[in-house]
Image 1 (cartoon, rainbow, N blue to C red):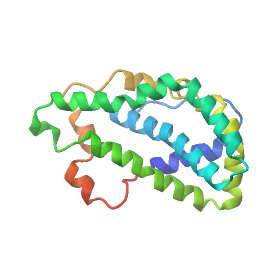
Image 2: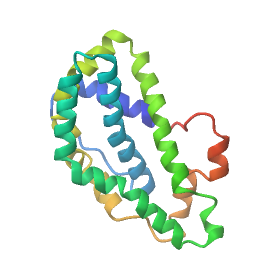
Image 3: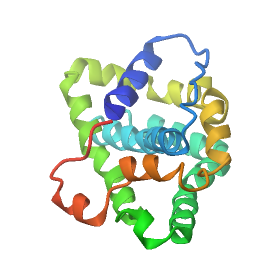
Image 4: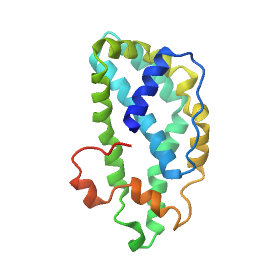
Length: 191
């Protein structure tokens, strides 16, 4: 579901006005981080998919992506650093409260969403996908993809960090895979 949400956001964004939508926080650190890191990585994946499929659009897409990464480098690094925050948090928990949760497994799960997002792009059909890719440079320069503003509530909640145990245990065990469960999964979990 998160993959479809990202693709839908990208598609709608390429055809809608440049006004930045505001995304409400769920109030849950894990859910908000999961959503935002998927969107940040989804931008990268979209650039790869579009540039790899439409070589004539690649220079414009790559230039816009480089600008986007430079402009948002601090936020991107901060959100990527949340994996370390989660690892430190989990390290402080007693072993029996971790429930087999691993940050490495969660990172792998997030990366696993790449294939699902690509599949959603391909299901659009080449004409629609081409239009999305043609609009990607403008989208990357739009307020919608200034995540610090358009996702301000998520960013604010994430910056608070994980809640003290035991409140945070439930969300972590639902989102972060255990190493055993992660190895048993054949496809990325849909959110």
